[in-house]
Image 1 (cartoon, one colour):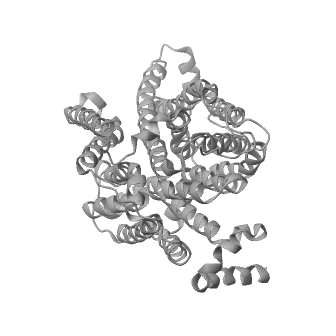
Image 2: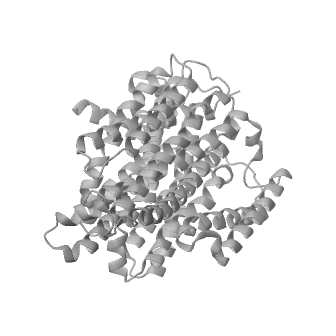
Image 3: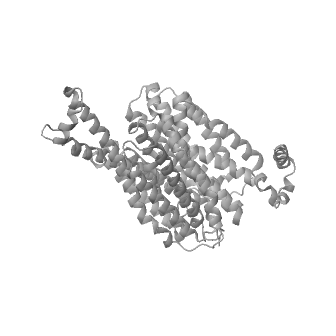
Length: 527
């Protein structure tokens, strides 16, 4: 261990004082994990993990934040919406921004902005302050997943790239899993403001590593098309707002949301028009590559199906099974453990087996976990819950590890930065749509189930008569039965979400075979 720390310290000193010897040391395979590019990739991955965690960690602490800032549910929801909208607007700009200003500058500014805005969020004393600071936080974190993905593809080859892509895939998978766990633990044992403060040391470490170790990249003379950016920002910003606020405002029954979605459609059409003319902040040459386009569609669909299970299962554990916030997080934690174990297994298998078959096997495992969830009873034991979480984690990892490889097959290297931004945009927009669909299903099915079950509460029902006969106080039987019906309706509506997600995933099982076959051996071909 002492030797490892000495070697790591030596690497930092060499990077600062003997940069001319860096190329020689990169060829030393024995010290792969101590090379500058590897340390940079790990630091960027850590930042990406923090950004993805922030999408879900706040949701757990919303009741605490509401009480502290004297806000209602509509006002507090803006703290989540503002973050998501800002991220959605800036994620597709990754290729343009890194080309114009350089990867190092963008990474440093992102780390600084994300860290400072996290501190400001923790210090916020009102909802308007929180919304503004969350907007800044979304802007700071938007580029991080795309930056690390593009950096890995540009700086690693063959098996080394597979290792780093696996680590990045772990960040994508573990982010939504760790968010509720960390949020629950902090909300139960500490002040909610620490949900934001925990980002600061991560940002500080990443900033120092990037500043010392990363070389300045070549800056391209790119002309900014501000009209294209305006159309994109307004179009996708309105689209995100529509999906985030749709369920709470009854979708198309709200005149405001109708105006928002119409404006979104018009602005997106104008944005596409500018892109077809070759005047866009997003490189439309990406969409000429079949594998990349289909991979974006695949990750978009998968996130729609996945996010409902990730976001609403902890709520079911709390409200349906009576677990505390932190206990609900601990019970779902094995999902992350299984993902961590499955990652190197799928990586090894990719050296010998077609990645499309491995991706389908991941989807199959995910389908199995969905049907397992949909059969839960009101007194489900913890053992089966833990097993289901582990099955689901393995399935998620099987999908993400392989789609990362398939997305970049035959993609020209000069499009890597643009590709990572667009790919992560589809992942982000899929999460938003999936959350909205799942919340709508729960709201609708809860009402349907309540009306169906409440129809059995009648003095003429033999089942109800047997139920009341077992109670000590018949005068409270109706109220007690009504509360049980409400609880059962909530439980059934959540199981419906899991069941529909499993059904939808069946179609995704065959999706990988629409993609071109990659080179078996795990390498991503760049031609």
